[in-house]
Image (cartoon, rainbow, N blue to C red; front, side, top):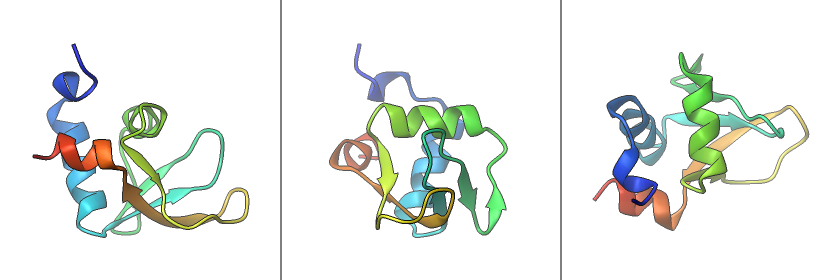
Length: 80
């Protein structure tokens, strides 16, 4: 079973927010996701999206700072 096959509705919504340019992510080993400027309600899922290679920080930034979140190729494939 692939990572994409086990995504839940909340994780897919997070991916759609990232794809829509509405998300930021902190530069840290345990990144936090913000959607529309607000912290995501499920940071565990947000971190899992990063660990599994679906989401990444678009630009590099200072440790702890927020930067634009971006989908990886795998993240884009998960939405199609």
